[in-house]
Length: 92
Image (cartoon, rainbow, N blue to C red; front, side, top):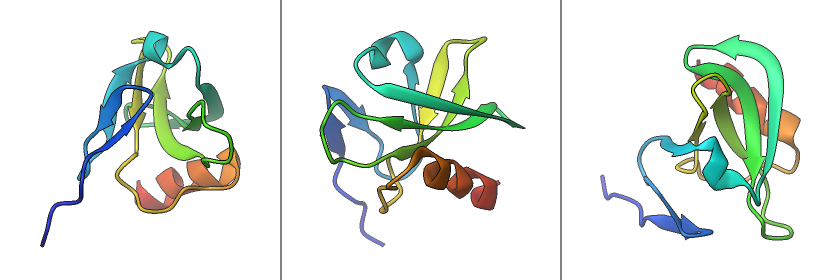
């Protein structure tokens, strides 16, 4: 199986095969949406880069540690944060 090309958005290089962990402070220009459903590693959520029309990435958000695990490796970009967070519900 071929490895997908790495994606770079807002100078963040995303791992093409697994979630990418970044400090929450690094996402200061992004929209961070957190749903109050606890998952291993944080809360189900979604993030949207500072690019109009880009779509939402599923994310696990851990405000206590200040880390966000962005599922930038999934092929689909979701139209709403709720739809992106449901990806984590299905994957967990």
